[in-house]
Amino acid sequence: MENKNFKKKYFFFDIDGTLAVGNPGKYIPESAKTAIEKLESQGHFCAIATGRSQAMAFDYCNEIGFKNMVSDGGNGITIDNKLIKIDPLDRESVVKLIKECDKKGFSWAISYDNSKVRYCKSPKFVEDTQNDDYMETAVDESLDIDKIDIIYKAYIACTLENEHQLENLQNVPFARYQNTYVFVEPDDKSVGIKSVLDYYNAPYEDAVVFGDGKNDLKMFTDEWTSIAMGNAIDKLKEKATFVTKDAADDGIAYACKYFNWI
Image (cartoon, helix red, strand yellow):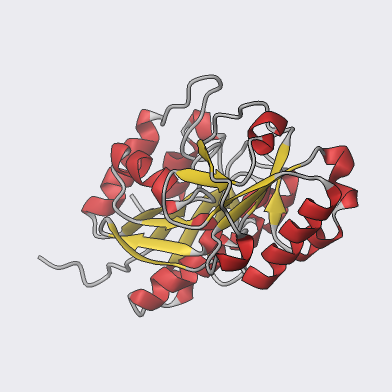
């Protein structure tokens, strides 16, 4: 029998520090897996919300049982394992940055397709990033940035101390996850969340987001319910609708039970 009181919610979960815990060796607590299974069995929508590219996150998404994803820092959405869209970065801003890098001797790489490979013009990028193994890097000496129409991400080899030398870095969204380089990538997951809700013609107030880190700040808005993990940064907790327990201490399950979603 149909539950007339049922109100469908759209749940979005950050990965590291929210769903996946432990270092070294990430794992998803059984309580979180069970909670998400219950949400889906009741008819709720569940998705990953990640800064990773769709290609980099797709296998992991399937491995942990998700068919839906906001990827590419909010610029990509996948529904029922089908890629709906990925919006590129602002090309002009990225090209200006790369040309400044060339002028000042900073090496770089870019992602211009939805794959697990990034491309650089010189082996110097591989050397400068100390053979970083985040993703495969292909050297293409014929790479011409003026002939690349779409850029999804860029990777600039520079230390924290040298960031100030690149004026155009301030004109693009970027984050540092490695000591040797920065990621130039979209950083507003709320954009992708709204795209999903628009896809289903669902009100924004029906979204629920879970996060823990700096890259989750922009998806914590007053338009929907925001759940900060107990291990979240203070700035995120300040913006949250509710602060749950640590991710490793059944935080996802605790919040879902608190709000009677499961």
